[in-house]
Amino acid sequence: MIFNPEYECMDEEARKKLQFARLKNLVEKLYADVPFYRKKLDAMELTPQDIGSLEDIARLPFTIKDDLRETYPYGLLACPLAEIEEVHMSSGTTGIPVVDAYTKKDIETWGEAMARTLAGAGGSRNDTVQNCYGYGLFTGGLGAHYGAKTLGANVIPMSAGNTQRQLMVMQSFGSTILTCTPSYALFMAEEAEEAGIDLKQLPLNKGCFGAEPWSENMRREIESLYGMHAYDIYGLTEIIGPGVAFECEAQAGLHINEDLFYPEIIDPATGKVLPDGEKGELVFTTLTKEGTPLLRYRTRDVTFLRRDRCSCGRTTIRMNRLFGRTDDMLIIRGVNVFPSQIEQALIEIEGTDPHYLIVITRGSNHLDEVELQVEVKREFFSDETKNLESLRTKIETVMKSKLMIGVKVKLVEPKTIERSMGKSKRVLDKREI
Ligand code: DLL
Image (cartoon, rainbow, N blue to C red; front, side):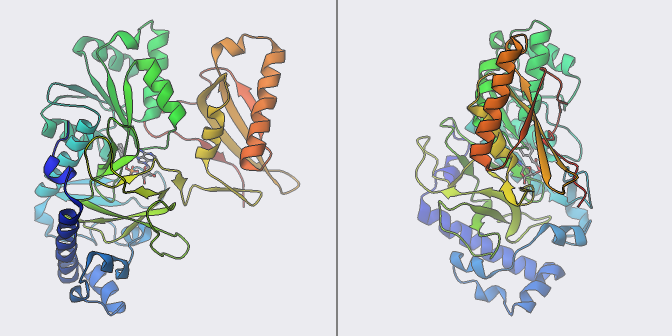
């Protein structure tokens, strides 16, 4: 089901017109009400009148995470504080958090964006959403909650954790949609197996997973363990939280809610806008936000955009599943490596589970050393040592050819790598540089 065909299936010309009108409005508002942006525009000798077309967006300044940190908590507010209804913060554990402040209308927009997301996965008012994203300052819990309500579905506000109870609720309430991080979905499946619960027999038939990188391999794993369709959903606190982009039933890229969030891809080194199809840093401008609207926010997420039509009937631009982040790119012995590349390489190797940890150290010879801990499927672990050794060598060979660096592989027993209920940690960088 398409939740809002008027906006999701809009003809391209009409959408561009709408985006331009909203952009113009936004720039006027920021210039008038947010001293931070007024200063930036003045410094570039730009006024709202200079924005005469949608393409002129490229003339506007970027906003970066440090701008948000430096103005913490309310420096970027574009409305009186009395109009703010709710605040959320980024889930990062280090540094000053970034704040998103929502007016009543912003919360409604968020509900709409997330209702479109759940509908993209085939959800409707007949569904029961078991929402295991964390409630609180993190945007996952309440974002999915508002979306389920706007859709008219029944929402069970579980939050993350207490896995035994999650499994009990899943069975007794007959939940049909699961919303959580992909790593928590896998963790719950392991616990279910242990408890002798066959998830495939339950009514649960779709899931909306995001907030962290995951791969096609993990998707296939989740789909087969639960007997469900698993969809990728994307968003970030600074822009609204979840609801920025979502996969539809075609599972072929994530539809961006571009009437609300205007996307661009730039070269992270030069800031130049790149054409559709080219990989670079994703940038968003919030087109309708009232509380903390942002101009050209650099997400640091790496992907590309595609404008070809989707079989689902939506006309919105799609972004590819993320390749990684410009800032979590690892530089190992001078080679750029994204953790997602390691995961991709693991896909091709039978016998491994999608649980891994990359441990980086700097040896006494000052060279970086990488140990890749990989969980092995239970059947494999009980096999002969000879088979384990050949699996280990195989992974090392594949990594060497894909990443161009040597990686020491350590095979570990199932369930030894720490599980996460929220965002999982894949990299342990012990280098002291
Ligand atoms: O993670 C919002 C969210 C909640 C999205 C629930 C989806 C579901 P933050 O905590 O601000 O917000 O983290 C945002 O997480 O810039 C990406 O790097 C990463 N991320 C989010 N979704 C995905 C995804 C929420 N589907 C940051 N795939 C973003 C890969 C993702 N990475």
